[in-house]
Length: 130
Image (cartoon, rainbow, N blue to C red; front, side):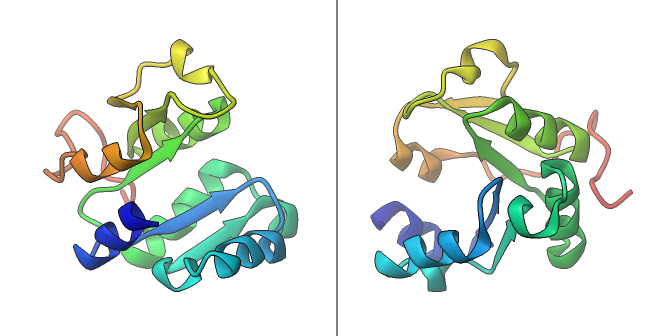
């Protein structure tokens, strides 16, 4: 919770793209008092859209100068690459897909999110809205 609250305090736009159900995601976030920290939640189970489609929707809505996809599964990695986002692969938790990716950053603790660079998207990557 502290990490998410600090990111929110720093005025980062926080959003979730989940393969799960929107009501479930909202319920879990609400139970832990985190729902208000997120500006948007996209759920595959409700809309039937792929991770890249969900990320694109968020990029169009928020028009960030830079965006990170943080994830632990190959679908997250594909979404980052398909949308021109930077990728922070998660090395904790259940999945070990991060071992097979060329992530920009590998996070070993949740609090490592606070250390992600906030410079502009590298020039060799197309802007997501292009």
